[in-house]
Image (cartoon, rainbow, N blue to C red; front, side, top):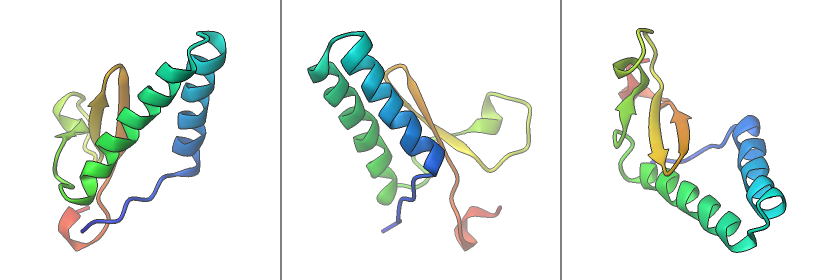
Length: 86
């Protein structure tokens, strides 16, 4: 099983998304559900690290990053270790 590590910036982004939906859109339930959907999708990487699309498939940059789509949100990640080839 793979281990997920969140960057400091991604943790801040998740908190800001939740705060915006909760406070600005006045929808605490939607805020909780949105964050739950995003993190559930990310947790799938524990078992299926190759689950998503390489970022280089949509932009002309040589990169080891991949991305997941969860509703209107994108999560970017890379695989560390021998398997990644990066």
